[in-house]
Amino acid sequence: SSIENGNFQWSAPSNIALVKYWGKKDKQIPANPSISFTLNNCKTITKMAFAKKVNDGNFSFDLLFEGKPKEDFKPKIQKFFERIFEYCPYLKDFHFTIDTENTFPHSSGIASSASGMAALAMNIMSLEKVLNPVMTDEYFYQKASLLARLGSGSACRSVKGQVVVWGEHNEIAGSSNLFGVEFFGIHENFKNFQDTILLVDKGEKQVSSTVGHDLMFGHPFAEKRFDQAHENLSKIKAILENGDLEGFLKIVESEALTLHAMMMTSMPYFILMKPNTLEIINKIWKFRNETQTPVCFTLDAGANVHVLYPQNVKEKVLEFIKKELVEYCQNGQYICDEIGHGSISI
Ligand code: PMV
Image 1: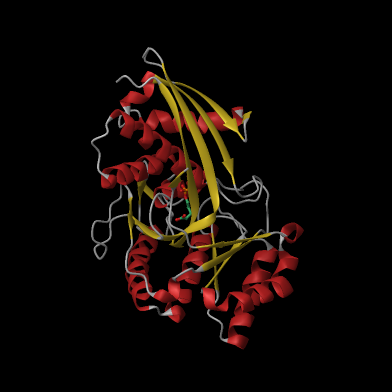
Image 2: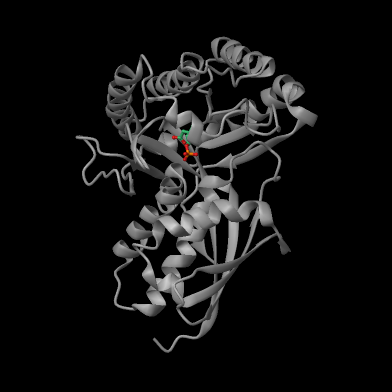
């Protein structure tokens, strides 16, 4: 190709799983299907500059974080590139300068791997599209999701769509273990759904997700859990279509607690919730009982709490959060987010 140099820039959002991915079959193949809401405000913005070089069989790149060299992120990105060479051999023809930043605080305990890997995958596909302009949008986004998955499993759900399913499931047409697929037809009760992220513990993760997924190998409850994820996905599929908020919060909370139960019952075992995580959960339950507001929580593999609720109760729930939950957040910090649409070229 005559393309010598240029640059792209993409933003990719984080996502929050409703039915959780926890456990792999093989490298980056999930042991069970998962489904997530795409977020809107928590995102990674990545600029990728490329310059043609002689293909000497080596791969080279510079990595900047907020414009400054960041050596400690390099090994993770290097490993990602090594995994995707077989799908993108052209990468060795260029030198890359990757400059990345997040819209959320770096040490907030919010994982940037999903948004970060998705943003990088989008840039790589933009390059591929320049090299091979006859490419359908479907191919573009599907391959972007596949590449993102190889960086971080859940990243494949941050490419495109408000609700995304990853992993084979008999009731989701076109679902795949290799990439995320957009879930269409959500009920208007879930339109502009809100996610307020309460930052309970901003410290380093106790267990990396790589270690976490591996704990499901030989886990005494693994098979039952994987079956349950399939059942919960069937149920939540129907719920997202019929708007049953009561049903929604039961499955979402049960999934969060099951994820943590898996970590508590693995060997070695971990408790990733903090006392304030439990305080918040109990307050949410009390508020829900007393006010009949359809609000629920979910958790990632950490202590922070995602509070999920429909847009029409936003004022009421935010008032409750400020009055009763902020005191359990580290430095009173929380992030208001809502369902979003996926990656954007900027
Ligand atoms: O994508 P990973 O390998 O960081 O794993 C993500 C795991 C959870 O966030 C706990 C669940 C999920 O489905 O996102």
